[in-house]
Image 1 (cartoon, rainbow, N blue to C red):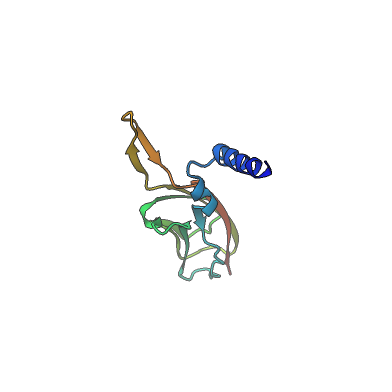
Image 2: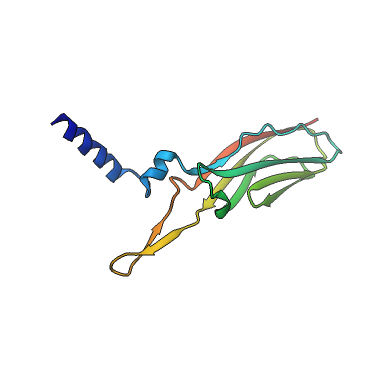
Length: 141
């Protein structure tokens, strides 16, 4: 009897979990911003660094569309460029200091679809979550 109870609880867990594809959630398929310690920059000198994103545990993460937003302090003279899976910080900073900003990432998955027995389109979204964010600090001396 105990064996059936465990099976029933496991089935209910899978039934009510908030992910469309339970296996992908167990594997933890989700967007991720890499932990990066940004290089120290110097006022009036060219600066370049980048923050890279991926879809964790997904071998086809190049098939996703990546959308970024950056909010917070960025020194004057530094331009933020979004290049597919990268957030690029580039330019000649004109002020010194410690600048903290947040990068927000949303991804649109490659959506696979099929038709059910009634002719309705069924979409298979493999992500457990489709957004993330991370704080970064840039030091300009």
